[in-house]
Image (tube, rainbow, N blue to C red):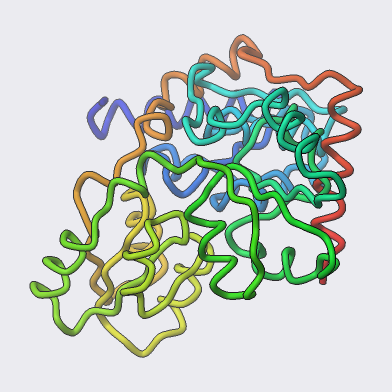
Amino acid sequence: MPDAAGIKQLTDKIIQLKQQRNAIILSHVYQRPEVQEIADFVGDSLELSRKAAGTDADVIVFCGVHFMAESAAILSPEKTVLLPEEDAGCPMADMVTAQDLRARKAETPGAVVVCYVNTSAEVKAECDIACTSANAVKVVGSLPADRPVIFVPDRNLGHYISSRTGREMILWEGYCNTHHRLTRDEVRKVQSEHPDALLLVHPECRPEVVELADHVASTTGMLRFARESEAGEFIIATEKGILHQFAKQCPGKKFYPASNKLICPNMKATTLEKVLRSLETLEPRVTVPEDIRERALNCLERMLAVQ
């Protein structure tokens, strides 16, 4: 990692080239702090894609992982979408393929297929409606009660939705490698060290961890809760990169990671050097074949229509 002077030099170059390219830089909240700082928008994956679609930028630099850049390409096909680290993937998204999903659909005629936004464009093209961790309960609650529901790929998020809606679902056996490794015992230990802190938990965590939460929310929801809460201390059960935003948005409050191992290596793969190189070369570029894009777009648009 470059020192402060090196960060400033890279940042100045990125800003200058961003203006020349008419580009917008998006960063997920799990990215490195210095990457978050050069972004025009910082947020969760779908929120960022919607921001990009609503701008007049010609180039979108997505500091995140591959499925996020694909979502931007689905929503903004006329723009150049860049993923600074082309190998930044999502192990959970890789746990479901379009071929395997088609086989499962054939076994369950008439099922509504709901996909977490953390899936590939090919998988979204096979699904009826998408959801995020923020709107998953509302999306599933909007579905016809007389039809079975297949939910992919995160069984932990699916379990949380089921507990909130009372809806039985056919859950895919996928999970987030980062969130799933957090155990109940680890959380209990941190709670004993900070007895006055509220526990905020992402629904990708194991059910037994979610059960301990004072508040369950998406990353954006966690930030909003902490800003509005009168509490002064919080334990955060999600990827540690979000702590940078907590410190910025909630000065004077204290935040403790539920575990120091809550680090996603894919999210940390993007660096300022790679952002600069992507703007210089307009590579690596992420595109989605038009036949897949149209079907995946329908999946996303159905979600956006849920009020």
